[in-house]
Length: 127
Image (tube, rainbow, N blue to C red; front, side, top):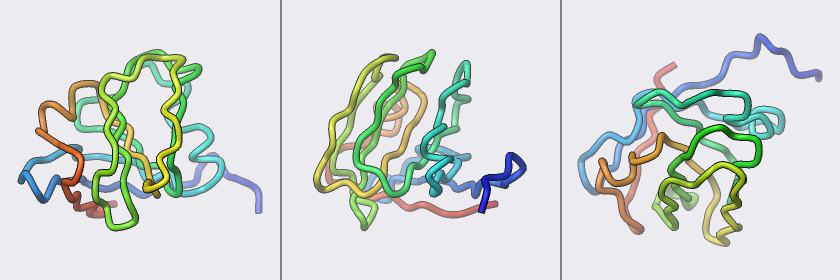
């Protein structure tokens, strides 16, 4: 099946259940090869409250990106197993063996939400 540019992405809201904070109100779920390949490439910025959840995924690169992002590495049960703050363009976040998905968020989101390794997230599909 060929990828269609009109394919509608699933959107979710992401809460930190452990801290009772909101990480993102509109996260695009990239769960196909093409959606993961494109990710945030080609965008000039990431809106506050926005993000991309890459599934399955355990590492990312920011080669070709134009802005820094916060990276949250999640286990199968949505527990945070790794965090990278303000990852600069043209960087690599190496594989994390415990990660099954990666959440890319606007820079400073990790600090604002007080998220830490071991916190459990809730991913609620909204669209």
